[in-house]
Image 1 (cartoon, rainbow, N blue to C red):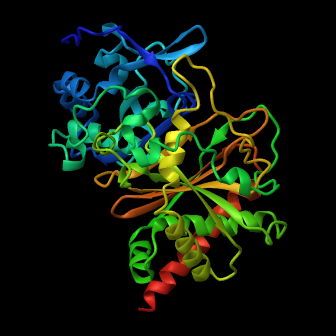
Image 2 (cartoon, rainbow, N blue to C red; image 1 turned 180 degrees about the vertical axis):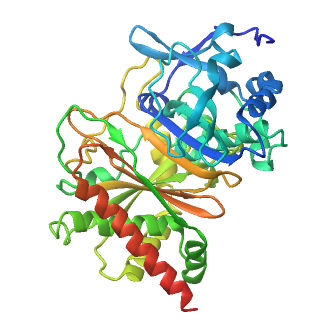
Image 3 (tube, rainbow, N blue to C red; image 1 turned 90 degrees about the vertical axis):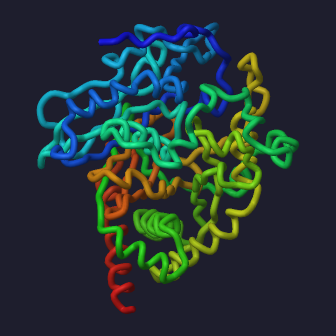
Length: 431
């Protein structure tokens, strides 16, 4: 098999900035299937192999690994032996389940920050499964990288969207000032407004440690949700938010009904007028900025969804997401020294905010989509994440939470989502 080689393999690059460094401990898993009659795992591997070096040339971030020097993380191009296709892309023997487990934590200094698996699943389908470090990608972006491999595997031309990501830098300027216009960079570091709004609350169920994350996922037909959104002028993001607004209050049996919950909603900063042309073409790294939407209890399902939609639309046009994205990147200087800190650190176990994200239309040409985020459960706190995402036919709900959260916690979220879905189906049938 032809060896892949680059003149700058093994070259040490720069230290990571704070937005690159903070999510290194997490690995994202995304996957989808196509009929085996369309492509077999073996044929998919051969098609990817034909354009593998071109892929690494046009998307050089896929060649990066992370090394530690004097306790600090640095980007480095992987050595030639570490980027050979057989080290990173595997055909898995036997029949694999449709439902994925979480990604492993791979050693970030031994090879590039991703792995691809090709396998046959039940029902004679071929699965394409990507595992990629959160330090170089966000959740939506992980599905875009999966799409790269999908089109290569099926020997199809890239979409216009994927083509726009070609030939971008492997890394960007330290601190990401090149991503934002002066309206953002001139403001410097700003602490998230949530730190001054958050009220004492214990939304996350207490758990015993050690622990680890699990990711229950369930699905429904997307068509009624799409129709409902058009009918009422809302988005699936508002539906995900409203489900969380009700489910968390239901789990706590009214304890927090009188306070607003803060829903931590990531948005794509590339879509803002404060994004530079360079940033708009960026595929890798964390593009997300954060909105902290305060929502009140609403007993009626439609009123709840409309309320979440209105609050999201009110906050969305502000500079806040881009300010939060830029601020997250400049908390350290180019020696790795912390130069900015939160005066009131965010702790989701002690304050009234939680994470709600609709990843959008993803993997549209694949079925049986999977998404999970292998995050650490620390001694003092953990993050609970509630996601929605969809292709053309199916809407998926996904939770990321410690396995030893009470069973009732997981069940209430699923029951609440299905209650909302039944309402949506009934509502659109009344047209």
